[in-house]
Image (cartoon, rainbow, N blue to C red; front, side, top):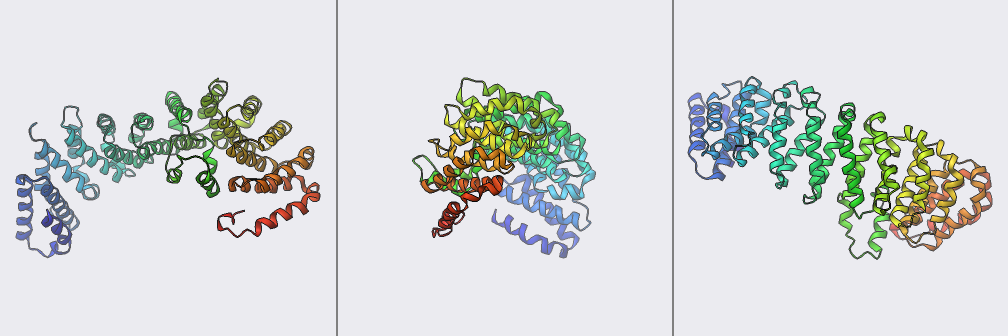
Length: 499
């Protein structure tokens, strides 16, 4: 095995110096070892040597070593009880991906035939796995090339094999990487398999027993396909419905905050969680995907990329339906989903505000803290992306949000400040005047009283937005606010510098 590794490293620098007889002898000996060596690890090492020799032959304009391909074809066609020989054939093809893709396009059809035979259900699983890995690498290599069409018809076979090996997460990750590489392929032959590619990825997203990183990779495949092929994706009405149902279900059934996307990169929010009373909090989890973050990220991409005539109604109808549910987790998913699609679907949502705003305002008064928190997130998103239409609701929004500043839940306090920041930035002085005095006092009081940096930062931002909206009418408050800001600027703790 060690000898194989050394040969693989040293051969490229010396091979061109060998005479013809030496080269022929070396290649013949490698094939003998491959056919006779009983130890799997040694065969693996010699496979690398064979791939290196094949690359050297092709790169030097040589004979391309036809005996090697005869060996591969014979090994792939070995009898049923010789599964290791067939597996070896695909190890060789896997190691030779670059060489095959660059120099051996004339061999694509027979190579495709080898893969096709290996993907049948009656084949040994280890042979199927080796074939899928080799084929996947070749598809990724050729994704942007017209020749990918030769192998595109094998995509359903890959997905079938992967579905049968759903417990092998390393293998599933390999297949998902291939699907990601194929997402942007301009080939119509690849695009024809959009639906089964999404279905496979969606099954991975749903799999509760699968590692979260693998599920997140599957969600990325779905989001990337939506970005790369938005019209084709959007026209698949049943597919859109299936994906949305899974995403909303994940948000419903996850205990995580569905407004957390607002604070994912906020160090103050992280610090408050670390300092909080939650004994189960793990700071490392802030950097790891969760079911909620995965679902919301995917929904956001669908809303932003797929044409609105295909995505808006299916998405908003599911939001409104859940907002009427007696179950708090359903209401949480509905209001969070509405906040997530507000950016991507802002244009149709502006025209739909008269129908959704009563639901949003009710959610802000919900008895469940997570629903209230998500309602603040949603209001902030609508305030940011549905201007100026949302300003018509200022008389209803501001008193509700003002009340939420006193909420017992830190997350609700912080998100209500976020709403004020987003909303007040665009208000005219006369709109903010009725609440100006109580608003400034409340925000200033929060800034002085709270020890939560996330709330402090949000309160400062909301005060700034209020000042912008009030214009000259903010003048009487400048002195007091300036005193508060002076205290903030005098802070010596590095973690508070952002204030």
